[in-house]
Length: 63
Image 1: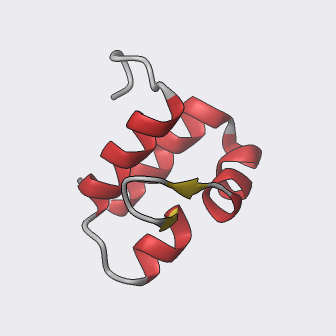
Image 2 (image 1 turned 90 degrees about the vertical axis):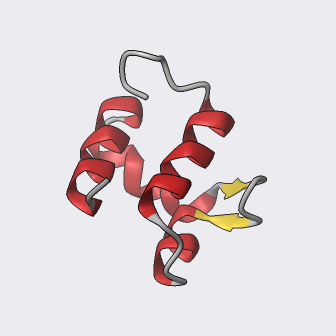
């Protein structure tokens, strides 16, 4: 998954404005850090997206 696809999906799930805030503030249990921290650390974008899906009950149509 490309990073642009990731942010597009985040916008679909949380809305474009709230997606960045959520990514900064919510610690994803499977990763032990926030979305932004995981991405900055070089965690694979697909792994970050899977963690978002698990934590936020993302609908299958978007996941």
